Image (spheres, rainbow, N blue to C red):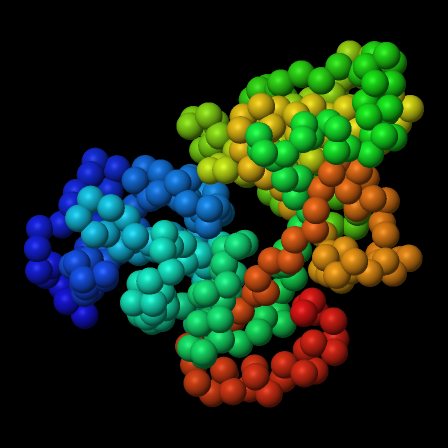
Length: 381
């Protein structure tokens, strides 16, 4: 790889330490790939927010949160003059005898230029080798199709090791649509009005409310038989501090009889508000705190002018049945999915996860074991 750029690199205060790792022409003009392990990168974050494929899990703010949990970030950004064309951020850490890496919601690109997409695939492979990553779990951006197809042609295998989110429910928003309230189920609207009449109050929370929210989040996780993520209140505070500093996080609390009862931790990034975490202590059910809280949060997102309110994650078979217009199996019509769909949400199938294994022998063993792994139900296809 070229170590010296063929032309002076653009430098910004937000990207003080980076190294040129490759260069070529894209669309007839010279472009350069820069690699950095710096935590903060304002220019990259701004690019992510400017493109429909951008996601906060590719941001340097997310890298700062995960660095506190032992993850090392490496970021490769392709620039053409003063413009970012695309790039990706990989987080890696040692796990036993190997080093694992995650490329979540990336690579991100601004155009589907075949030269750019192919270059990104090459740069991921080079970075995996240079960083000594033995196993890379990758999921391309939610609306991506081009890179997802390319990965399959460049040695990536289907993911049968983890249960990453491969489907979600989103409420479409925007001035071209009727007001979101009018698209909500009538019972949702009724419960929201009842909540107000019965004394439920929704307020914007702050750092002082994080402890109470984390406790409510843990109650919800136990009810759903899952582990809390973030796993500790300390991790939640790191997330708050990283995104709150740029005005991208909002914590809302529903109080019943003056007591915090439910909460929503939302991240606004680019053209989307993500309901990242929620919590409820299972009290005051008759006061409908969750209904009013979600109702208020979605209406707030609509006022911000974003395009989507993302509930983050449903079972893929359930989402597929909705997309295909087939009544879902009775067991899949869980109450929380029914609840979320009452706010006018639509099901979306996301790209499946893929795995890139550096060692050829292990890669062959893994591919041979794929049928058995899928039969065990470790992954949804």
